[in-house]
Amino acid sequence: LHLLADAGVSVAAVLAGLGMMTLGWRWLDPALATAVALMIALTSWGLLRASFRQAMDAVPAHINRDEVQAFLKSLPGVEAVHHLHIWPIGTDEIALTAHVVRSQVEGHDAFLDQVADQLDGRFGINHATVQVEPPGCADDCPGQTDW
Image (cartoon, rainbow, N blue to C red; front, top):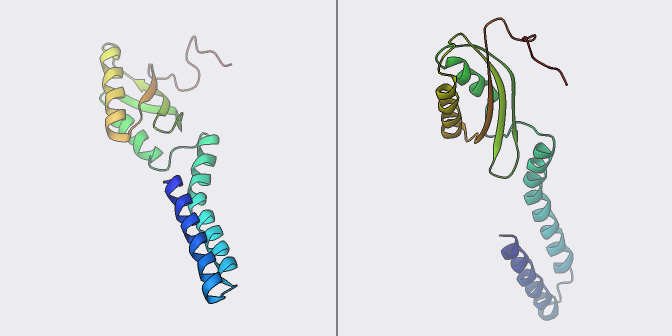
């Protein structure tokens, strides 16, 4: 797409040169330069915003953090969700970390596999790390270490 845009600008420059030579329209060159500058500014704005969001590890624009949190809270046995973070780690890879408070003691492995599959299928989050915690363990779990 970028190469096609470059080719289009080159063709427009040649046509402007021909128009200036044959018709004497000297204003054609600055008008074309202004149009090209505006086109570049408009098309690069979205790229600049996306790059900034990725550099800041922001939640990708197409993912609603509240919906992800509500989804996690709706899973069987989940009582609470905290420390939820979602960020891009590449152009097509999205990471998530979360702590879920779950009263069920058994079946954590199957639960985590199901959560990872559903996060990928529903939200496109394909690199999920979910920590299961027992009830009453929101901020001060036994054995939890702050780094």
